[in-house]
Length: 282
Image (cartoon, rainbow, N blue to C red):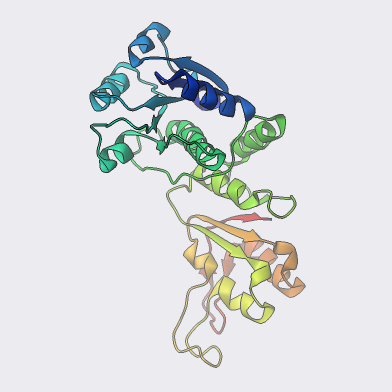
């Protein structure tokens, strides 16, 4: 993993000292280390930029060319976040999307700030793992911060993501278990395959079997056509079973068989189907 992806350092380039200070305080509140510059011309004095996770830069005339030169001069260029102010910019909306990891308006709110920070962290982690690849990884929100607890979670994600092991996530409702599951998938060798999430507690017990394994035509009243289940939809990728404790015991037994034998049959079917799915449960 690159040094950049482990960093909590943010560089702010903004000629407005009040705005720069306010953003710096917001970043420090969520345990990031911020450094401010009043002009992009001062960037050359810093030398190597790989220690920075991201550069937050306000709009200025010629920023498109500046971004191109910055990336050409620095092999490990930090993620770039555009700070949109009241001044005009020579960038179109499509150019902003192409050149920057994200953008923030003048009145920065914590949810938006957390979003771009997490995008920067995901870019730093996924790119080295996909060296030589061209795929643009899906980026996820909310796993942001540098507290000891979050650092431990990130470390465990880094340890388990490259493996093929099934994973059980524990934690209270609303603590972000699906976010962690999506991060594990995004950093795994299955990142370019489907991620399918199922809330086991939201599906009636009598429907859970066909939802998981699919059904053949005529398997039950109303089954007018064959239908793949979640295991087939997640083939080659990751299946996330949320609230697995709410799953009936007989379904848990069937699930255990699938995990052990890596095969299953559709409801009403006799053909055994091979399953290549990584299972994450919570």
